Image (cartoon, rainbow, N blue to C red; front, side):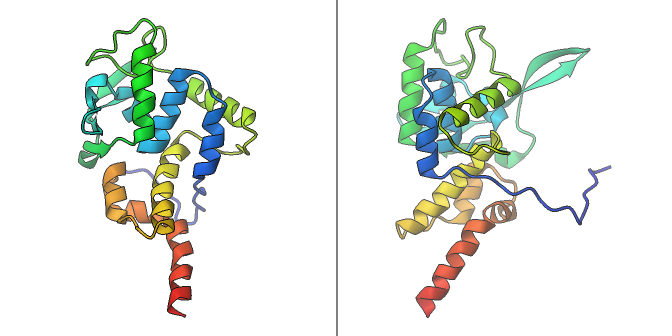
Length: 218
């Protein structure tokens, strides 16, 4: 059976970082691992499992691209938790996306200073000194701590909202610079199975600019 969906349920409002808010947020974080992790989420729009699954050979610094073909999740097996690396469940989640310059700079910096790691091709990028990925609780706790230090209202804000902020930023900046970004391109970068998913998530921005179009017509 598929999951039951209540047709009368009010959907949770998506939360977004503006570019200015994110700069304020990241400016108060000094830990190189978490600084790079959050910048990669924001500037590349990755899912958490995709981020954990990244290895250095997935990053093409010459052509400024990231190859996404696996995900890493923490699951319970025989009463014990362990990390599982698997291929994405949806075909369109396997993709090659552009690597923003800011994220590239951070990744190169992390590669040179990662303690105890050779940063070779098969090494996972975002791991702690114990060579394991930060847990969900660690990431959430770190995110909220940074939000508090940056004095940014954090009620309800989660890791996945950094991914939403990426798409929101692309649409907003495109309109501001009179170079609107095709919603289908954003959908492909995010790895959405259907472009309608992208429309639904970013409808608030599109509605805002519909009114601007009406003003132009007037």
